[in-house]
Image 1: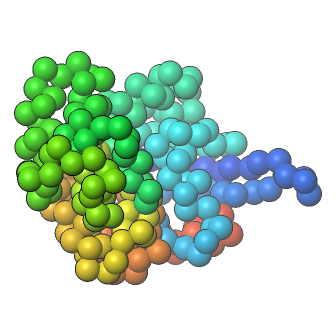
Image 2: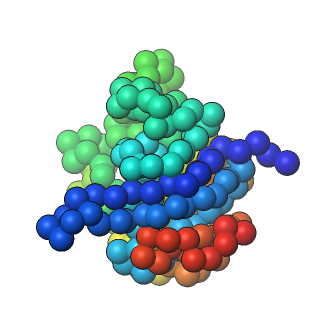
Length: 226
């Protein structure tokens, strides 16, 4: 049995609103093994993206605990959580979030250079070839299609060999054919590298490819984390 990479206990998130306190997430509990794949599904406004942000340490819960790769996130300050993310986490966003002033190779090299990796260029080139963009290294985001930009984003997310890849609607801005190719790529890298995948998605086909699913409705877990 793989050791747990994520452990969530009694997680709640409450924020102030004009009408008083608004509960976004309430008493969420689940555990995820290393190398597993998990889809977080539910209707808009159910708390999916909020949960993803909490799991990655981008925000803190109002109550409850999150352990990520052995680190108790709610016991860490912002700088310490940033270090945990740098060491253990990769991100893929629906909006790609590439830097327009950098070409594909430079976008993938950036997190490696920030780490001080001397092999940043070689590693970035290998990853871009792996995602089928070996001929697009010098292209800027505006010169790439949506699917190509998402593949650059995936290469960047995997650059530092993260333990966990968090993806927020990774196929949401793509046509169905391109979305299928991006899904294939995520799961190939998951299997080859043993990277744990945690996806927020409205795409039923993408969710079905994950080993586990949890469903949120109104901030509560309504389907078991099987």
